[in-house]
Image (tube, rainbow, N blue to C red; front, top):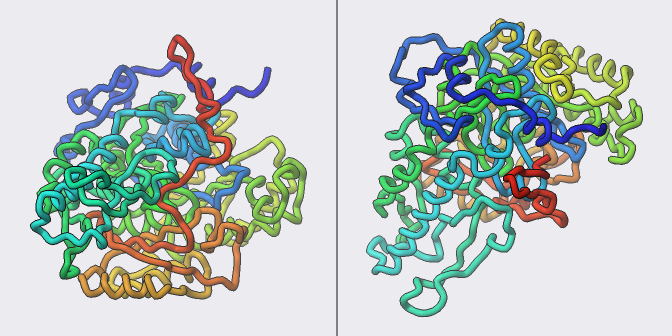
Length: 558
């Protein structure tokens, strides 16, 4: 019998009813809003009870720079939590929601893998509880109200050549990156250039993820800058009187979603992926709720530590007042060999030379977490059957030289039992004292913030700002937005802005081609290199393998 697919393993699992999972987590049924038998939203009224309850310890799972060989960040997150619960701790997972674009595009499902998954896997990977659709609806309501305002006389004097708000759709569709709309005559709107982002790159997603409650959500929505008027002054969603209706569309989406692991441990799935083009973290409200309920909370951030972890620490933790107790950096021997120049078809063979050449990628991420942010770190090696003892020993030796332990994670194959070694090290690290700090000061100028990230985290020589970026930066300073965090949109495949520079490249500069303010979310987005906020489908989309039979059983989602 061959190896079972992720979806086969998930479908063979007998799930507990979600009310029982909630009871196990200590969540009163009165706070549950059921979406069938196996999914529920948790009402944010839970926060109002027992406000003085102790907070749990937060553990961030991040990873090395992604490769085609795979890393297994979500798989490790889920398996670690199962492993910690098997040791008798009260541990909860708080992870991000998958996006339909990548699910049907390049990767299939995104709810963990093997015997370390979140279920119901198919639901989570598809429409789930409708949060993504609500975000898209709120985004596009604002776009519709903006264009209607212009059509109805444009009392605010919005300059159609200076509109910054885009429409969005939760699908990889490069055809929509740049469009012209409003064609067809006077009654069909005002013709203008427009474009679409993927929903997870929408500022609405960031706002939902960073809002502490419904009032905070509404305030942030009102602050969104949709463009500029003829006097070059910003125009906000509040001026269009859109924030109330947008908040109404999002009121249920703001509530975290409760599901379970294959071992029936509680998981909150809430918030957006894509830390290469957005802030890419689980929502503040879900993380805070989990910390209120559990003694340990395992969360993850998108892509590698130079993207997801940096944004988690410099943006989310700063805004929400969070401090991680420990960081797990996930790697595979296969991925490290890829960074060392080993060809994909040779990854199953022992290659200590390629491994040693690729190890600096891991070591740089580890060094950043430990020495830039001041956090206790453990390296989790996501095990493959082809890993040799000599290869594993080399990884351990190099990490030990940095004062960091390595734990073999076998959660894909063994579930929680394969994560016990890692769990014990995480529990030990959580008891260590640490001095958490950010990679930049919030009062630094915009260019200094970006340079700090580039030099400290990417290990670049410096930053080149294009004339367009310099102009945008001056405009943001003029508008008073120089004291907010920075979210750098950059390729996930390299520390640099060139996806072909693998490992830990040296002697490079980051090019910032433009920047904009996400005034609602409360950060500046700086675009590095050729990064797109609307991905396309590959030559052979994952959608080609996804199907459903006459009984409703889905196949092909990994």
